[in-house]
Image (cartoon, rainbow, N blue to C red; front, side, top):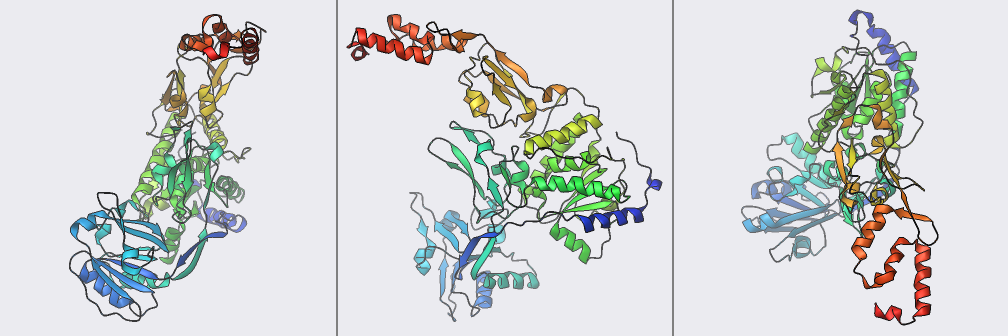
Length: 572
C-alpha cells in the first residue's frame, strides 16, 4: 500500500526511454475548439494614470495607427499636441476617481463615472462621441484608480503597465496596444449543461463553486423568471479551467477536448510507461508556459517525471490527481508558477487539501500529492519515496464526471485501508451526507425534485425516500426546498461502504383513497394538508373528506355536489 521505494532499483535511463515512448505514442489532448468569438477593435485607446506616465506613453503611441488617444489623468492636466490621430485630455477629480467603473473587453470597454443618484456619465460618449473605448492602457499603481483589482486576470484588451516596469516591458506593453486594432478570434472554451447544474432550483440558490473560483470574473448567475442559471461570458473567459475542476456534477466542461479525455489520457500514459519498462512514475501537472521556460533554460528532468501540460493549472483538479494515483503513479506534483492569480492559487490549495483529506481517510500517505513552489528544482526532480499503489490500468466505464470520480475513489478504497469514519473536509468540498428528521418528513418529495443528481430518489409505488451519499454534492438545494425543515446536511468524506450504498431515509405506509382505494399519498401528508386546510370554505363540512380522496375521485365528488346543489360553488 505505502511501501517505501528502493532507490537503487530505479534506472533513470530506462525511465527516460519509457517516457519518450509515451510522448511518441500518445499526445496530451489540446484545445481543438474552433474560434467562434470575435473581437472588433477600431483602435480608440484610453490611457489612465498620472500625468507624467500618461504623457510618456501617449508620445510613444502617437502616429502609430490608433484611431484616437484619450488621456485620463489623476493629478494635473495635460496639453499635448495632436498628431495623426485625435488626442483628448481629461483630468479626474478625486471624487470622480472613486466613482470610476470599467467593464467590458477588447472593442467594448464601458468607462463610466457613477454618481450617488445612480446616474452615470459615459466617458466615451462625452469625450470621443462613441459608446465604448476599444483598448485600455492602465498606468496606475496596481489598478488603484478604481475597483478593477477584482480582475485578477484582466479582460482581453486591458493592458496593465507598472510604473516600475523595465524599458523592455514598457516597450512590449505599448507595442501590444498598437497591435490590438482589427478583428481577433478566440475559442469559446466551455459549455454549460444546465440540466445537471446544482446552482439553482425552485428559486433557491445552491452550488456557487464556479462563481467563487473564476479569476477572470467571466461567470455570472443570471436571474430568470423563476430561478437563476449559470452563464459564462465567452468574451471574458480565458480558459483557466478552474470552473470545470470545481464543478462537482460536470455541468461545466471544456468543449473540445471534453474534460474526461484528460482522465483517459492519464491512465493510458501510465499504462504505456509501464509497458515500456518504466518504474515509479511521478505525474507533474505544469502549464505550457512553465514547461517552455524550463526547456529554454536548458533544464533536463529525470526519466521518472511525466509532465502533464496544461493551459493553466486550474484545468485539472483533485479528481485528476487522484486518477493518476489510482492508475499507477507513485506521486503527483503540481508545479506552481509566479503569475498565478490569487483566486487560482487559493483554488489549487483547496483542491490539494481535499485530495489530502481523501487519501488520509482511505489509508494512504497524503504526501503522494505535493505542491511545488516555483524554481524548486530539487523537489521537482526528487525520486518518489513510495512505490505506486498499483500497476493495473484504470479503465472508465462511465462518461459522467461524478461517476468517474466514484470509480477512482472505489479503486483507492480497494488499494487502501479506509477508516470507516466520516472525515472533516475543507469548507465547500462536494462530499457529505444528510440527515432526515423522520418525525417532520411528510415525503412530499420536494427534495427529490430539486436534487440535481441521483442522490435522492422517491420509492415508486411505496412512499419512500432513499439516499446515496456517493452522488451527493452538498449543494444544499434539498435542505432549502424542504417545507418541513426536515433535512440537515452532514459535510465530510465518509470512508465506509455506506457511502456507496443507497439506504432508506424515511418510509411510511401509503394512504389509500377512501373512495376507490388507490394509494395516492402518505398518512402524514394527508394529515398535514387536512390541518392546514381545515378552515378553508371549499373543504367545509363533509367536503373535508375530499382531502382523503385521490385526484380523480376528488373531481368526481365536486361534480356530484354541483349536480345536487348548482349554487354550491357560489358559496365559496
